[in-house]
Length: 75
Image (tube, rainbow, N blue to C red; front, side, top):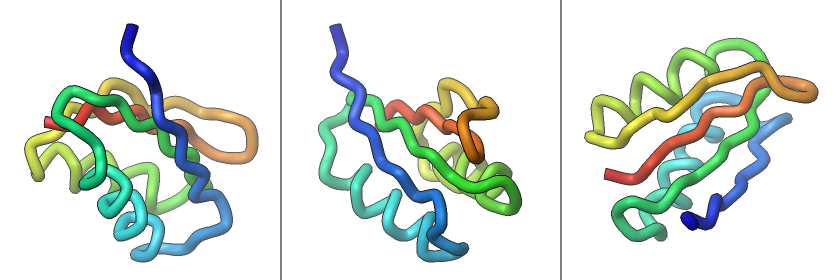
């Protein structure tokens, strides 16, 4: 079973939430899964789009407690 790495970016504004998520994703091996919690707003659209463009797989984007949960598999 794949371990899911969690990163809480709630309260971190754009573009720092994207940059910090990218740095964390860079530390993972291909195929590992990162779950990112973000506030509602631009991050819900920008983070998935940016990582898809970088060749990663966005597994889900869903409402979560106090924001949204974005699940990304490193490509």
